[in-house]
Structure formats: structure tokens, C-alpha cells
Image (cartoon, rainbow, N blue to C red):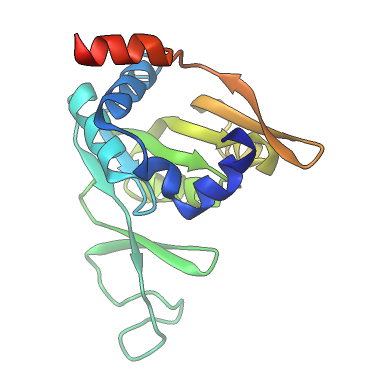
Length: 198
């Protein structure tokens, strides 16, 4: 299925096919590579099952930023944000990304989670929200990184020294998506069946 990985990831079907035991195994491997943090910050585009499992395994809470459907009106200020002093809001491309004030404690160590790292635009938005909260990002945890889209470089330029941990890195060769790097060793099918039915 690897040549189809790009379209599967874009459609979100990849994560729908992840079984609970694979989610647990994946998160356990990822967890071992992450810096200590006080809270996880993710987007509504990230898989909630993965975020929840990571939160449980790390023993820390998570915050999911929201995408606001903002329409210019009497409810918005001159910058186009909702007139709501209880929200921290930033513009990310054509979307307004927001979290409640106080959702992330002051000086908290924030781990940003992305199930897929694309161009890095949303990840940069989460970094900005972290700063607005008076907290600081200690790392970015990524399940699948599309290395050929340059997201890692954009994040590294915006936040020099930040640790980005990706379990799987995809690259492109002659127009096809290929596996460039893997940091997780999955059981082969025979072992998986044996373990499941013994």
C-alpha cells in the first residue's frame, strides 16, 4: 500500500484502519523518544485516539486547539478575530486557530502532537499559540512525516533547537511515495497472529 500512502493520508483513511493494539504499540514507541512535558497540544485534524492514548501513557493532559468559523461581522474585531477576551486566537492560512485562555498553564512545557506533518503550517500555528499562552514548546511528536513537503525545515527555522520526533518519514522518488526512515519495528503477520490467538 506504500505507493498509495499519500492519498490514504490525505483522505484520513490510514488512521481509520489502525487497530487498537497498533495504536497502543505505536504510541508506546513514540513515548519513549519524547522529552518531558506538562501538556500535549494538538489540532482537531489530529487523530483523537492517538492523542488520548499518548496522554494516558505520558500521564499528562491534552488540549485540542479549535478551528473557528469566523465571519467578518459585529462580533469580530479589526483583525478578523472574534471579540472574545477568553480566547487566544491566531490566523493560520485561511483558518482561525484558538484555545481558551488558561488552557495551557503559564511556563508549562508543551509537547506538540501531529499525526501527520505536512508543510508545517498548522504546527507553526500551535507553536505560536504555545507562546501566546506564556508556555514553551519542548518538542514535536509526529507519527508520519511527509519529508518531501519541508515541514521539518519550516518548524526548525521558526523554533531553532526544538526536538522533532517522527516515527515514519516518507520521501518521494520518481513521483512515488517511498519509505525513507522508520523508527518503529512492527511484528510480522505470523507473530501478530500467534500473539493474538494464543
